[in-house]
Length: 280
Image: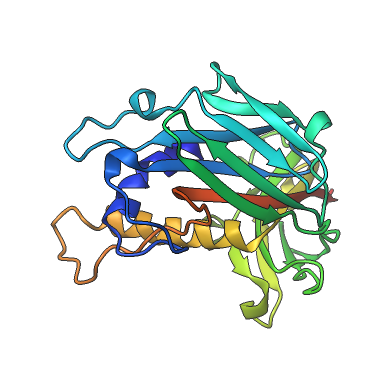
């Protein structure tokens, strides 16, 4: 995430507006912050970068701010984060911070030059258990995944993979279980209020040629800050990928969402649930 934030700093600088109203700053005075917190994280990290004047060589090492004062508060207790050279981030054990579902947190970053950045986020409630139902179709397994309850999850991402696979190639069965191509190509970032009415249906090819196979689902309930950042980040990446000049782009680059006052960046919360469904 830290690399994505730094690479997208240029898009923030050329945009007319960010996700929030901020004072227009010269690139060299702009500070960018990135942090996503979750009850499941063992270590909470905050990444802090300094903008550079236009024309300077962009590099993570030059942009890194190592002497900032960084703190996160839950409204009653404030914890200071220390800079970690190995990960190039400000870090604290979650045993001290104790990120909790449904609780709001406030981030503050103060630099040696006097810049003060602030942001808040609220960690989503604990996600509901993922429900999978499926049927055998020849050697394949077709399954459906029910959408999460709206009152539990407003925004979410999810991903499937196969786990506990035991497959021995043999005559007439050289390829083991795998997801159909459509699973790889799908968009997995959702606003629950705009979700499609039907359930998600997918297929595990050659599932019943294995001796053992399960579906592992990683479900992330995310707050609105994280959703808007990921959505606009994807849009920005798509714009940048098509900006080679081979095909003319007729629209201006759109701003990447920011909820940080005094600079740019994102402070978001998420809550993760990992589930396993045994096919065989």
